[in-house]
Amino acid sequence: MIKVAILGYGTVGSGVFKILKENSNIITGKAGQAVDVKYVLDLRDFPGDPCENVLVHDYNIILNDPEVEVVIEVMGGLKPAYDFVKAALEEGKSVCTSNKELVAKHGAELIRIAHGKNRNFLFEASVGGGIPIIRPLNMHITADRIQEITGILNGTTNYILTKMGREGADFESTLKQAQDLGYAERNPEADIEGFDAVRKIAILASLANGKTVDFEEIYTEGISKISAEDFKYAKKMNQSIKLLAKCKNEENAIVASVSPRLLSPDHPLYNVNDVINGILVRGNMVGDLVFIGSGAGSLPTASAVVSDVVDSVRHLNVSTTMTWSEEKLQLKDFAESKKKFFVRAKAELKEIADVFGDVELIDAGIAGEKGFVTGKISEEEFAQKAERLGGIISRIRIES
Ligand code: HSE
Image (cartoon, rainbow, N blue to C red; front, side, top):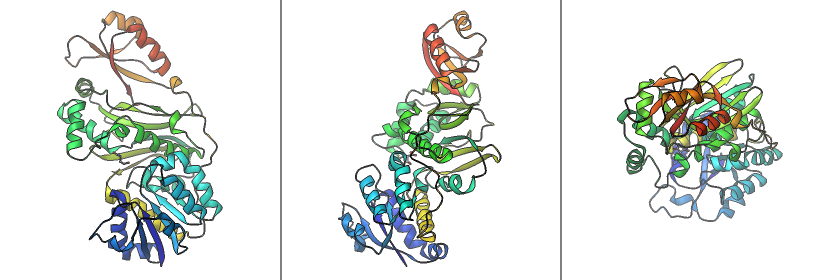
């Protein structure tokens, strides 16, 4: 029997506890031995809860207990998670986590420490919640150069954009409704400004390329400026608007970004709606692979965490392959990346043609402005032309 400890008894931690109890027979079969929760660590008390008998408030009890082989970190945030996880690994325990902040910031270092002890640092739940994506990248898609990963990696923003698209509502009222229904946090900045998605794409980009992609170097734009009018044009073009997190090999350099994009119906992520996440992986041999499912929520996320626990038990004294070094990956300058742009501007047709040349006009019946699609140009060129034209109301990149 393997003893494990859960750090944090919140949404994910209570889900992990529940799955380890309710699916114990299945998990025992898959892991090859029973997995027993010896401790749950939380600052709070949970009178009457099934975790009550194993609840502790002092991390040192777990750290200093040699019987604990696997530590499950589901507290979130960097403090104290980073110190706790590092100490557990240095103590020779494996760690499974759902913590994307921790993995994006310290992933390579924590993998190195784990491997130095013949142990594992696993983080399937850190991206895409219940969707298997980390293990496929590490273990399965190993014969390919990964050309592109494009993901809808944030459920909150996908829910808001889907609702705006369906109901024609504006951003602020849709966000408020999402908050009232518990789909969006009271402080929604990390989700709506893309800070959550950028950490997740940094993790995927690091695994796909074997070096560390610094999330702070990734161009990041959220959805707070997307309006009901933008969706009128999208409808006219038969396109959806999605917050896409991307890393792509463009002329032998990796470009990464998080930004709202217009998608046509033939794109694999066009119909990924509501809180669902979707990830397209394009390999140079295998072609397109698409992963779709619950990107958040207690049980889907906990299911991915427990899959890591099973993996850790199966590989108790051997490190499973995880190619992610601490060497930094130099990203291509986003300003050089080319694409078409959809633009709304208060300008005359002649002025638009003078600056952008041949454009495709889109008429969504909105007075006092023009909507158009540019040719394929770089971010830098677009910014220069937009400044020359003036009167830009909004612009959305077009996914190709
Ligand atoms: N806030 C995240 C989301 C939760 O909305 O997808 C999962 O990381």
